[in-house]
Each structure stands twice: as C-alpha cells, then as structure tokens.
Length: 231
Image 1 (cartoon, one colour):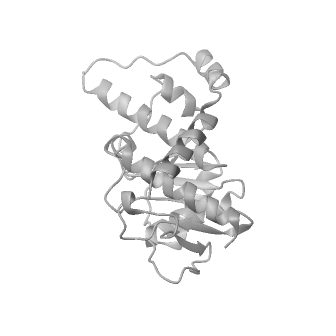
Image 2 (cartoon, helix red, strand yellow):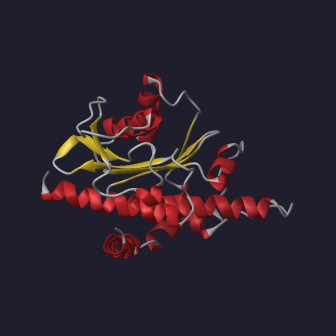
C-alpha cells in the first residue's frame, strides 16, 4: 500500500465518523467513497455491515470500477458499487462521492418542484443542482444513467431516494453535502408552516457563489482533528 492510499483511507474513515456525528447515517445502507490516488480505476468504500462509527482506515474495501475487489476480507454494498462506479467512470475529475438517505434529503426528493432557492445554503448549490430519476440501484443501466446525470452537476437529488455529491476532494464533497442537506432541511421546515415560500431573486443567486470561499480549507482542518481523535 502506498503512503497516498493510506492517507486516503484515513481521510475517508474520518469522513464516515463525521457523517455519523451529523446523524446522516441510515444504519449501514448509505455509503461514501474516495478514488485511490495514482489508481484512477480503483476506489475505497465501506465494508458492508459496519456501522459508520466502527469504520477504520484498515476496514475499508478497495475495489475497481469493473467490480473487482482487491481487499482480502470485506463486503461491499451492491447498490453502492453501482452508484460510485457510475460516477467515477463518467467523472474523471471526481475523487470523492457521498450518498445519503436523510429524512430531509429524501423528503425533498419526492417533491415535484424539488429544492427551491429560498435559503443561503440553497444558493450555494442551486446553480449546480441536477435531478436523477429513480432507477434500480443495482442495475448496469442505472450505473450508466447516473454517470450521465452527474456529468451535469456536482450536487444531485436522486428522485424518491436521497442525495449525492461529487467532489474533487473529500472536503469539497462534504461541503456540498452539508449545504445540500441544510437546504433541504430548511425548506421542509418552512413548508410545514403553510406560508408561501419566498424565493431569492435570480440576480442575487448569480452573485452568491462568488462569496462562498474558504470552507474547503476549514473542513480539511476538521478532518485532521477527527483522524487524530479516532481509534
């Protein structure tokens, strides 16, 4: 194992712990992955059956986009392979993929109009947001279809399913997921009041992304703290 792969393992294990801390888990049925540095066809994913607060750098499963497993032990989620391999095949620039089934994300995924530009968090993902129609998670057709969708944006609402983000790095994928999750949560809470939602003007939306700076660096520091505090 190279030093770069070990570092990627430590970072991904820390991401799983942070995801658990935020309460974004669905027991064992969601997943995050990272592309192995220097091996563009290979990625790391959780051992299927481990709770997120149990995941360590050593327990992660190494596999490739064709379904070959290089770890001696461990299992992978079949739907997880479909989702992550589909993105990595279609997006050579993506090095981390996150997928969640939170109540807020799933709730917005079933709304006909989807996510509305009504909050500051929504503005940071709205122009890069795409929707993917529900498909059989373990099929080859879904693998290819998801890849096509992810070529259009980094923040994805999986219809009737949940959320997905693709980033050039682990911090970037997390930041996108955090903003997307908070956007969905704020919208659902606002809709519960029965009041009419007030959208942010389009001119303001176009300027919003220019002001979103520095968060990736801040999350990298958080990632380091988690790595040093976790077993």
